[in-house]
Length: 291
Figure (cartoon, rainbow, N blue to C red):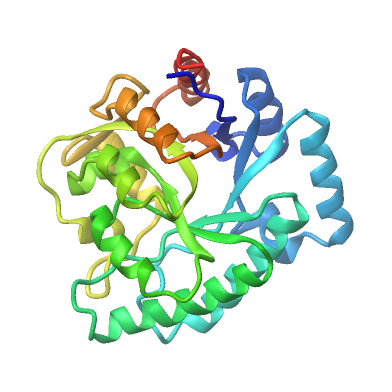
């Protein structure tokens, strides 16, 4: 097996801001970057056309590309119909920004897909994803759901009910390992028709955990990346680890991605740790062993 996929890193993992993060991404040997685009300097409302063009030149000037934007709006995803109109509108604006910056992918969490396909939560999520999917497809783009909150087969059943593939998948193997206990290698094959972006992350499940306590659910606490990172660092239910130190079968994961013909980014995510820059640098080297 010889990988040819470009390597990405999540700029925000460095914790030093976007501009400095771009320099660091180049320094560790990445080909591209993923950037959070929800609030602050990267909020679409805070970037006019000239600023977008300048940022794109800055990225390209480092010899990088943007693999995806992260448009995760936290909360309960799209489970709450009362707040979905505003969230859908914001998500569309993030996708517009993505296109201006040269990528067609926005990754996001939509909330845990419920088992009850006839209930109001499922209906709210379906309606929101249908609208987002149609909008993305009209632009030749994708909203990519991050894996982990539910088993791959259950997510596929939900995606199969949508009229387009404008809502697809950002595949994260560690989320399966740490939370649902699902096999990410089998998950790649299950979701093969939908994978448009991937993460490279490692971890270990320490005990069974209710995904609703991790990713949020109506009636439970809301989800946030800060909360998930805190849980992953605390190591009670699961723990995120540097690449190769956890339970993700990377030989099998990379082979599965090759088998389905995936040619997109392998984007490194490191949400915890005392020295994420060093961990990311080692992660690039880890992936390069397969090239």
